[in-house]
Picture 1 (cartoon, chains in turn cyan, blue):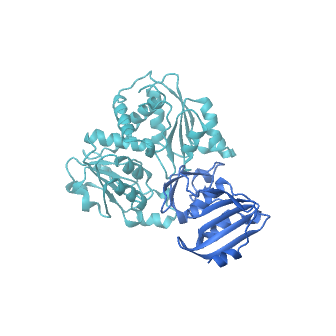
Picture 2 (cartoon, helix red, strand yellow):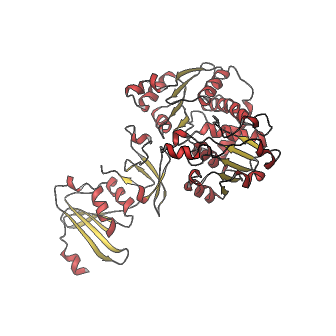
Picture 3 (cartoon, each protein chain N blue to C red):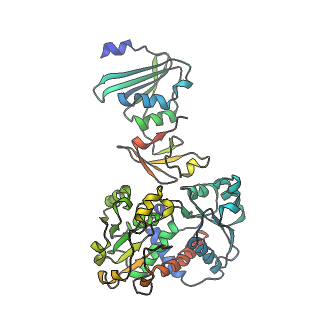
Length: 304
Length: 153
């Protein structure tokens, strides 16, 4: 298997063997390899704000000895002057060896990948895909639980608009898992995802009350209710405080149940859970650097 | 039935689209952009058909449908048949079959899709023939037959 030159655009492009390979290489990348990407340049084209994704890509590149160029605000790029994503990617291709792109426009990473011959990594394209987040989520689950097969995984929060949930559920469908979707009806998992999962044979359960299922769960993946994805602000007001997990949850979960969150959190997980052994969301964020190191090394052909 | 069919003028050169479900006939007319045609077009509705109940037929004088147009017809009416007529004879029967990939034929209804913000041909993958479901290969949204918006040009 080779990832050399490959674009990382959508988690749907990954077979189970691909996913396992990225997880395996990520484990090797726990240790820094300061010269592995020496002489290589990463271009970060961030057309919308991002903290974790951009910083962890930059950190990953630096830790492997590479250099980073780019912008993190649309206002400083020529897109503000009317330049297309296609042209911006074409330009960046000439200046770098690998591109990470993030925009609110869905499908823009696929288009950038078509425009260029260097590998393009999708750092999030609107409500569509964020494959590197999914890979680091999978890595975090595997690291915490060793085996993914047999796990009971709950998703809590905004399951309707939450792309991290959609992508992770699709990726997990390669394993034998039970999935629990916990959200108010209006924010439940879209029907077509449920249909896809059920066709693959994944057992899915839906509920609005986390305490209905919390005792069964091995992993609880919590997401923020994302204000920016709501077309109607009144709808957002209705649901923004739908869930607030705190220490009262502790008597209702397994001793080794782990809580994940792609961050940023707003109020859905109380900080008083941070110092429990259940909270692994900061470790999850740290894994972002490890997995992105693996991906950069793979697509640049520096590891097989 | 035969008596009615005989009343339909035969065309010397052009295209005949037959076996269209009657209700879809005008949708097909719309995607063919008939106002751009300079020669006669004959549209017949509600003919009896053993296969599909009520059918429609469109006869277009002096114009041969392109593969792209036939693909568009396939999306709306996979039961249709298209014949190319030359000198009153059927020169060619074009198979009306939904292609696996639809390039530049359908618009993506997602306003946030890159195909609506940049000059790029849309690409859809047909994931199910019956009932038709197609996925935008850029924003990855899946659409059913009634949600698909066919480009007129």
